[in-house]
Structures are given as structure tokens and as C-alpha cells.
Image (cartoon, rainbow, N blue to C red; front, side, top):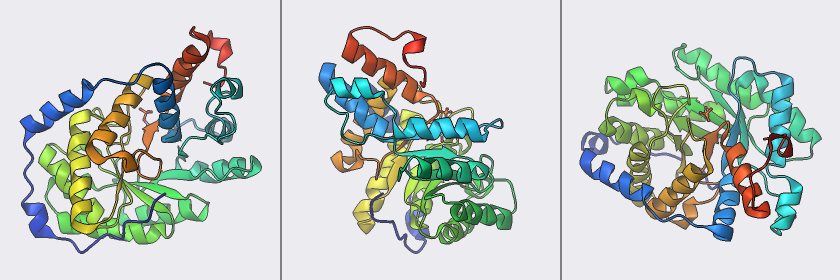
Length: 318
Ligand SMILES: O=C[C@H](O)COP(=O)(O)O
């Protein structure tokens, strides 16, 4: 992760002046989706880059020690060794950006990664994920518990009630407290954009989250009916850019929810490159939150290396 965002005092005047031009946002999102994407070996290289930015996620009610164990081993070796060898990439220590699990599974993940001699960070959702509808003291306790169990990154959810009713000061105060509870763990703030109503609200929530010291802002929990969309991403990365220009602090971006194909991962990378520049193309400032994206990326890399798509048994860990 890059240097932390210390945040700043809440600037309500800045927040109140925010207006988002919906037509301009939609047009820009269209343009991004029609950007020419890399082909052949360049595409394979971009796909490996995407792999390094994945927060390999499992957030299911039936998560157990064993599927978290498998997830961690997959995160440590996300692409089969022989495919990497064919690409001359077998000795680069390629891993995903992190694994992401519920708080009660953090200890399992930390244990597996330690046994595998890996320093891969464990991220944990917290603060009453996904709805955030538990008392503040419980949400804070959850953050502290996940950090105590070894999570190096905490994905908090914002209080949508406060955002929808324009209580920005109260939202700022809550996020500040989460930041303090995180200690040295980096904090990603999930806006749950599918529940924020307007692009203006998304921009304001992004700004307040960054002012309160978020190291990343993240689109969604993956549990809302609308998750990571390109127009919303344009709004959020523009807020990141404006915050950087005003404060000099770089905040990362994490689209999450419903990202399933290699092709989509290339569009997300193109969006970051075009909107924020090359510096935001690393796991320090960009993550893709996804539970099943890696499988399709592996298929495409297999195709690049062998000239055909794999049978199911050829990528058993996918
Ligand atoms: O934060 C990550 C998301 O929960 C993953 O969503 P997904 O299962 O739709 O990939």
C-alpha cells in the first residue's frame, strides 16, 4: 500500500458546492468502454497486472476454514506455474493484491498465509457488512477484532442513512472513528453506490470518506442490486483526482461486485490509466474486488499460452 491518507478537517463548503453533470458522466463512461484494448502478448501482460490488483474474495454464509484455506493458496499462486513459465513470468512472485474475508474468517486466512510463508495482506469487511445497520459500538468492536486477528486492511461500509439524509458531519465522525479503530490497517471505505440515489451523492460521499482518512474508496459490497458501474466509477475517480489536487494525498479506488470477465478487468485498468494515470495502476492504489473474476482471467491466459481454451480439469483451482 502507498503512503496513508491522513484525511483533513471536514470542509462542508466544498461538499455543498458539489454538482455532477450526469450527461457528461454517461458520455465519458461510454468513451471508456470503447477504448481500444490491448491484444496478444500485451493483453496477456495487462491480464497479469489485473491479477495483482484482485482482492480475491469470499463473503458467503457457508464460508469455512477449508474454502478460506483454498482461497489463500489460490491468492498466493493465482496463475498455474507452467503457464507463467511459458510467459517467462514464473520467478516474479505474482500474487493477487489481497484476500478478502468476513471478520470471523480472518484468523483462518492469516494462519494459512503464514504457513505458506506469504506476506499477502488479509483484508476483512467490517462495520456490519453489508448493510451497516448495527450500533456504532458494535461496528467499532468488529473493526478492532478483525485487526487483532491479523487483518492488514479493513473494508468498512458507510452509514447510508446518514448519506441519504445529508448528515455529512455525522458520517465524517463515524468514519474518523473507524480509521482510528483500524490503527495501522489500511481502510477501504465502501459507499454502496447502488443505495446512494444520485451521482451527486456518490461524489459527496466519496469526498467525505476521503476527508475522514480513507485510504481507498470502494464502490460496493457486491450485495446491492447495482454494484460497480463505469459511470459511478467516473464520479468516484474524479473525486479522487480533485481530492489529490487539493490535498496532495493519493487515495486508491476499488470497484467491487459483479466483475466477472477478463475483458471487464481490462476496461477497468483502461479507466484508471485514462482518468488517474499510470501511478494508479498498481495494487497500492487500485484493487478489483471479485470472487470469480480470476477464473476467467486464467482461462484467457491459458488460451494465450496454448491457443485453446482449457477443459474444466485443466484449471482445477479456478
Ligand atoms: O468486495 C467484493 C465483492 O463482494 C465481490 O463481489 P462478487 O462476488 O460479485 O465478485
